[in-house]
Amino acid sequence: MTLLLADMGFASAFGAGLGTAIQAQLDSERCMMRNLRYVGADYLEQVCAFQDNDDVETLEDALPRLIGQALDDLLERLGPDTGTLPVDVILCLTEPAPKDGVSAERLTALSETLPAAIYEKLAGSCLDVAGMRMVTDAQTGPGRVIESIFRKGIDRAFLMICADSYSDRDRLNALLEQGRLFADGVANYSLIPGEAAAALLLLPEAMRIGEPLAYIGGAAAALEPVGELDNTDTLSQAMSDSALAVLDGLGSARMPIDCFVTDFNNGRYRAAEGAYCLHRLVANYLGPDVAPDYPMLDFGDVGAAYFGAAIAQICAEAVAHEQPLHALILAGATWSKYRASIVLNTNPIRLFGLYEATVEEDEPIPLEEVS
Figure 1 (cartoon, rainbow, N blue to C red):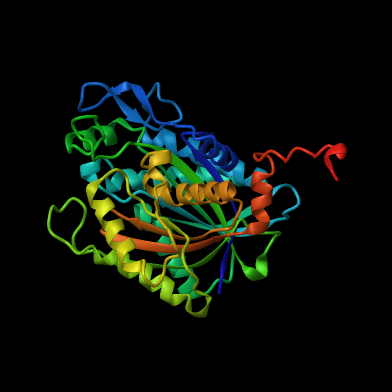
Figure 2 (figure 1 turned 135 degrees about the horizontal axis):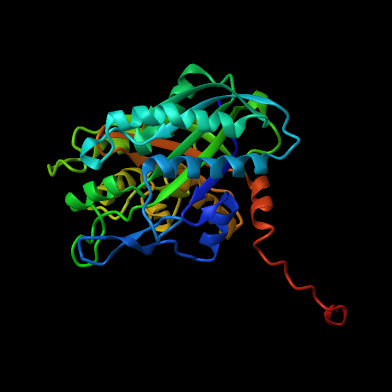
């Protein structure tokens, strides 16, 4: 059983559009800049990855902007010939974390305002909203949702919207107080705040529309008893357990992983956790010379939008090497301590559409040089 990623709209600090993000990575561009409106622990402007590094917004303003850009991109990529497609919308946001400046009450308020904006954006489009629900599991939300879809059966279309932004003074202040914002010479192992949104159209094979962007083979989740902020010894088993569960669950369809993606965000805990998992998989599950890929080092820490950033990075790598990738995406949530793993395969047919505008054609050989 396979879940099709028909297409994805995306927005990040590089700007609106999945194509924009792919091209920026191919060109080795950087979106991380010092924010002129926020000073970090080193008394310098904080390094951030926001679309507007001259200002700091609020979560309530940033999310509608990013989601709107991602939905516009998705609708444009789908084109006018898609027809009308009923979709169940799943909105994946950050987890409630009062210590990080995001209370449960704040998320409840967003659950009332964001759906209205999504309904308005999709009104009259090819995507007809049949229902909507919100999941607040941060980076692990998409993995846990996809695991549930596979468990219950893939019988309808889903529009998964993952969005997050640290361009919010309450969140920045909370992270700064905890020493979790990157500052050169002060907090070298801390995160660089970013923002992003992804709108993913997920379909069963029976509802295929053209060639999908990628195929999702499965997902799994596990609970880690020791979290990244607990400052306690741990074997970091849950991420490995979730990775092994999804890979073994593929059965005869399992093949060596050639793209290993983790949500390492410049923090020591997540680096160690990813390294443990890599070590446990290398002998029997990974292809040769596989090294970790880190979307957060391209996009900043984008929180609940990490799954979209991971796909954007995988697509860019597939385009750069002009070959499909069999990827394992790993994710962890800070406060709930859930870990999730997703297996994704890029579609080689769609790769040509992604890189034909970015890779120069070979120069023709003059006739006189042909013997």
